[in-house]
Length: 444
Image (tube, rainbow, N blue to C red; front, side, top):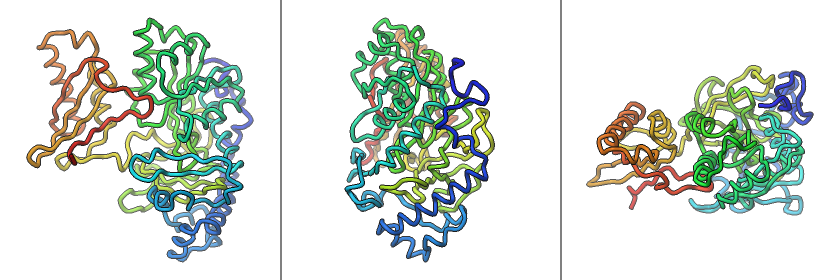
């Protein structure tokens, strides 16, 4: 942390961050104006949204207060697949300047569109994201998010450039080259998935590069759930301050929310995205302090407005001024989703729970995989976890003791007796993007 960080000097912040500090009445009025315009635009130009609102007998003019948003039907990921490729667009193609898409590994890809104004909004919220974690002109940002159809790379790129930072658009992969550039270019900030940064730490050690001696001080990590234990591992093995960034292609990409230097949750840029928390089972709106599914409505998106998009991310909203002075609301770190849960012997399990249990046990590394199998109708779960070289070279008795400790930690966390297999360092395949935590072989 240096004195140049925007949030460290009382009363000073980047001018683009002004909406982060708006008095709440002013912010709410701005949100309502933008919500009404967005609903009108979606109703007029997106047949699916018009049909859904007509079925509920809701017209754009019925949205008179922010609470009236509850009258609008939800939008879900399947809607984007069902209208593939351009059915959710609210702008004619001649006004669309950018298309991004998901990988489509589970079916048709999700296609998202950006008008020129949308790119400007995206740049703005990414600039504000970087400023919130103390970056400024003069920083050197190594952007290891993937460029291309994935939204991560270009979003971070434009935001960092707008801030005045120097961007290294290295994209993902080529780990040895990443480390060489970190070392030789004096990089002060890196953007990537947290699991990939841990891989960089490990590889740097093998190459004789001391991560703690590099000028690298900020990590902007996202695109996959990660735990507080993983944050501690990163801090202990580098001088990097980790910041959690949040976003999703359907809304705008990265830059929907980010942690500030106070680390009291992730701020949502409320002047552009209106959050709600709902019961994932019933769809009922819950109080801010309740845990539930995050629902987002875009307030300024032109090409592809989203009304009440169900993110499937489970979290809690927090109101009240943050320690950094921002007035925009925060949400707690997303550790699980309502749809990445798997059921084993009648018990709901989230990979983040497994990770949390593993990292409580000394001697384990933050690389693991959950393998689900079925034998004679009985579901079985095995957790494969890498251990440190010192542990792996230890006696059989010591290994068995560690295995037992991990099994106990898992049992205490997920209330299940599961098999644990300790594996050598680097046994589990590394990811250059999102880590694949669960291998479900029960359908095979």
